[in-house]
Image (cartoon, rainbow, N blue to C red):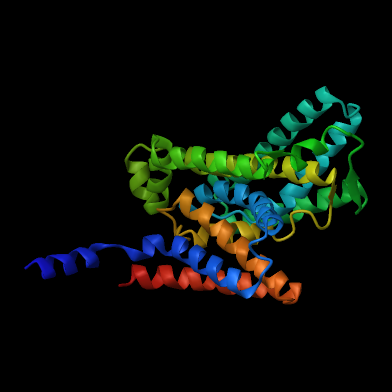
Length: 322
């Protein structure tokens, strides 16, 4: 009797829920064995820093994907927002006040760009893929035009301290990523907004009948993603004290979507996990790091990311059809 009860209890455990964490642990162990340099402090901190940029965007992307949408413009938006931030910084002289105003500008422009996406999706009734594919081209084109296809270079000696600083031996971007993960986790799991977001993605028609403001929820998720892009643009441009109009943010949309999907959020909408996205970002970061350390061509890294996304989606599909 006890044996059968124990067996039934094991069957009730949803192991797929812990798949991202298991994948992270397995990758960490394999990477530690494959390269003697993987566990070095410098390498670990490098992974943490690199993951933070796309990971922060992925947190916002999680909400968009839960509603059944997608945002392909985040990479181009990062370059555009970062460029405007540096132009504002230089115009105001690069002092402390200029840095504060530039940060506010980045957050505002990023949110506004997200609002444009959200407005076209929610009120324009245009498919999210089409909207964000178009704005991806627009934001990148604007960044290239404004900079003359070159770099936006900051003249401030204060601004670089934001992205290159450390706290307790850990890069500041990592701390910001951790704090935002906690905030977004609480927002998704402990507020009406989070429940409404899941409801819209699960069944939009039922959500409307339940008096949920579907259009407002959709609009707000894109605005939220724009805000996260603004944060990443600040951290990235301040670390380099410049930003490239052509290369900055390149493929960030792929990394963000991959982190969300690896973390267990369904591309069909209705459910998702911020903690899963957090873990998914680190899984992707370790994969990228190992590809570099083992000498795999950088041109093949996109192939690996694509296969990872396909594998994660396939696992979700099989689970839903069991």
